Amino acid sequence: MRLKRNRLKQYHLRPAEAKKDNEGNFYIEYGEAKPVTAEIWPAGGKLQAEMYGQKLSYIRNCRLDGAYKVETDEKGRVSYLLGSQSFREGDGFCVYVPGGSDPDYKIIAIRPYRQLYMELEKL
Image 1 (cartoon, helix red, strand yellow):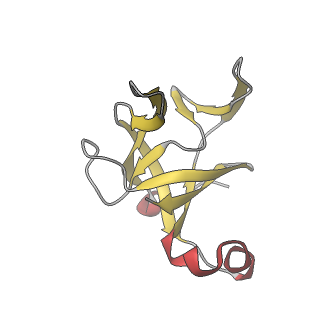
Image 2 (image 1 turned 90 degrees about the vertical axis):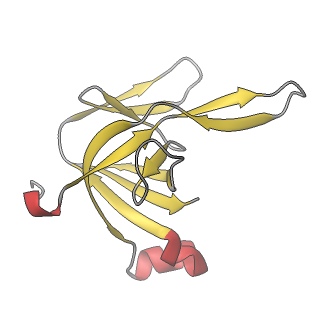
């Protein structure tokens, strides 16, 4: 099943990088923005309403078209490679803001169906 072209838009993905400050605390910093073509729509339905409850209005569904590959790094983190892009839970997604600013959504779940399907949560 292919995605309809009129539903696809260009967004920006910003990979999350865990950094440590001088006091030893960890924080998340987002890397360089990379363009991604995806279909994004608001979450809904009985299952997602049960999963997220009151947070449902802050959740968006995202679907990417293309063949992807699953990779695991030495720390056991799972990445999904779609072309030259790498997607991982926790990465930032610029949906309603330009790519140069901080992301307004983050990837909370990746579902590897026929197409790569993700759930995004508002930051």
